[in-house]
Image (tube, rainbow, N blue to C red; front, top):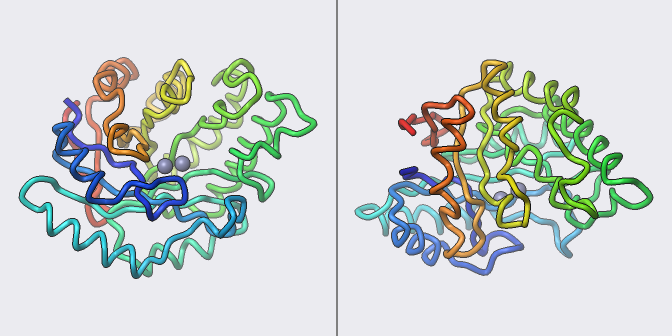
Length: 267
Ligand SMILES: [Zn+2]
Ligand SMILES: [Zn+2]
């Protein structure tokens, strides 16, 4: 049983209405021992009305209080999901130095300065063309900033094409994805298994098992597990499938982070 769900959102994120207390209660109900809050911090992403960031001082004040409140029932880590863009490298270098996060996920939610979920990057292109442009920019994102612990949901873009995963496969983007994975491994960054893909109607979690296998093959072994829940009922979503997925791809341990250091657990 996977006991740590280390990717979830609260009402500090624009796309969640759930309080940290509700998420903590939900995690206890699911039998988890460890969670990490990873609210969105997407600097310069204005596509949701206001800039998609939270006030770090308020965030820590609230999250530290919740961590203490639940200390006897749940180990709570305080993390963040950064929205990477090529021009934000030095901004995020400073940002992660400034605040005592336990865990930092680096995710790509934007390409060509627009949010991928808003689908502007798909206009006038086939899904396959848009996916390639996004993977190419993703490599630039990681080149610009790699001061995170794991790279988020590598192939989540497959959710947003008109025909979803039809024009996506690891093989089709092997050059781009290999370059990203090699760079991550070189920089000592892990990746996450993000179970939300299935919830979004895809036949796989992120990344696809072909990508997980390739990451292992290239020497990567640092992996965290998260459901990317935005509501209590989505915490630990499909976690009963995690063991088979990870073992099937050659992993024997998964990790979670405290004070930016990994703790490893047998799968
Ligand atoms: Zn994300
Ligand atoms: Zn997320």
